[in-house]
Image (cartoon, rainbow, N blue to C red; front, side, top):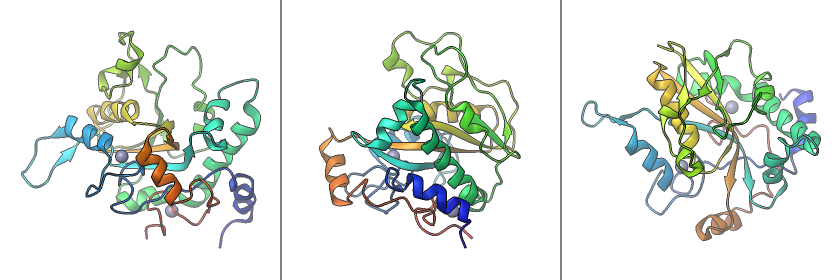
Length: 262
Ligand SMILES: [Zn+2]
Ligand SMILES: [Zn+2]
C-alpha cells in the first residue's frame, strides 16, 4: 500500500521523470545507460573499474569505485527533466525545477531509502554531497536536498582540494586527489549524492576518496542519469524504449529496477 502523500508527489513528477531501466545486456549494471553488445557495463564504468581495481585474490576482483549507483530518473537531452537539472541552480527560474527534484527525493526517501540497506546488507550510516570543483562560492545547490534524506544518515562534508588543475576537462577525470575528506570512515556505508551523471568520472573520483578514508561501502545516489541524443547508440536506445515517455512509477525500485529487495 503506497502512502497517499507519495501518490500525490508522484502525480506532480510523473510526466517529467522516468524510471531508469535495469535490463541485463541492455543497460549498464552500474549507471543504467545503454551498453555495447555482450557487455554488462558501459565503456565509462568499465574504465573507472579498471583504473581503481584492487589487487586481491585471483577470481575475486574488488574496486574502489562504487558498484551501486542509484539514478532516480533519466534526463533525456532536450526534455524537461534535463532542463530541470540546469534550472534548479538558477535563482531566476528554479522554483518549479527545485520542487520536482525535492518531490523526486521525497518519493525515494518515502518508498525506497531502506532498499539500499537491504540490497547491500550493510546499513547506510553517512551522507555526503559531491562538491563542485568549478570554484563555486557558498553552498552547493544539492545541499538543500540533502536535508530531505534520513536523519540517521549522518552528514559528512567532502570539500574540493586546494590544488585543483585549472583545466576543467582534467577536473572531470575520476581522481580522488581532487577531494578533501577529514574523517575516518572505517566500516561506514556512505551515500554520496550528486545531481547529474554523464560519464560518472567526477562522482566516482569522490567515491574513491571516501573509500580511501576507510568507507566499507559507498553508494552513489544521483538525481538524474543524463542520456545524450547526439550519440547514435544512445539515441537508438531512447527510441527503442520510448524514453522519457513511460510515466514515473513509485513501485519501480531505483535500486533494482524492479521489485524492492527483501
Ligand atoms: Zn555505466
Ligand atoms: Zn525499493
